[in-house]
Image 1 (tube, rainbow, N blue to C red):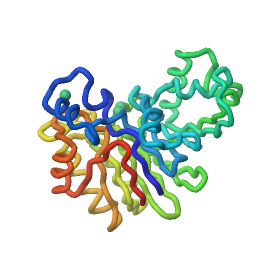
Image 2: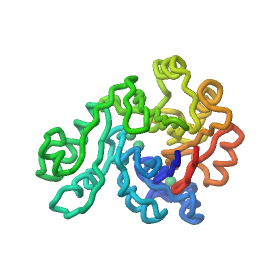
Image 3: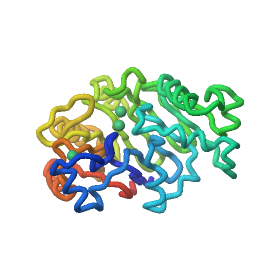
Length: 283
Ligand SMILES: [Zn+2]
Ligand SMILES: [Zn+2]
Ligand SMILES: [Zn+2]
């Protein structure tokens, strides 16, 4: 599996556009890995995790094609993870040609909210009707928590996130014959039922990507902060990581976060890594 991070920030991007705190000021000054787009991940250039608002600029910046995407798995419908305009641009009125058909997956409540967001912006009809699906060249795939589905070579399990529960937000376990990925943003502390299921299935990952919105000295609230992230990293490393497996932090904001190199140095003491935009990982 070829993994590419298209974005690694929380909702306001990073640095925050109007913030002059030390973290944002240093990030602005140093640039590079400190400049983060809204979170999204691409797998084998064909499976997208979250149709985020910055995936197009990321694709230009890192020369990553999006035209081969066949599956988009939505974690939830928050605006930093879903840009309805990108779906709307598939309509014939926009004149896109030779599009790859798309499977748009998510929980039923997330799919329903995506439909609301799309219909607020256009009159192309509901995502759940055959006419609209044909016009947009997509199908919707409902993913129920703990129920594995197979899409092409990928075995996918959605797990309930501890975040946006009104939308039944999902974390995703994706495996193929060679590798296993756990994508865990957005979430606060992962609930025990999820850990039990991972244990029951004896899941071991090559790559675990986890929410790290808040940094050192901040509490976990609707997202993980450093202390709780480290506990999660240890738990994954102990029970659900292959010997060569790696754990990456994503969805970073500015509270308690350090400049990238300093934060990476901090993280390496606890056995994890800090993702950055454009990072490629082969597992
Ligand atoms: Zn988010
Ligand atoms: Zn700031
Ligand atoms: Zn969210």
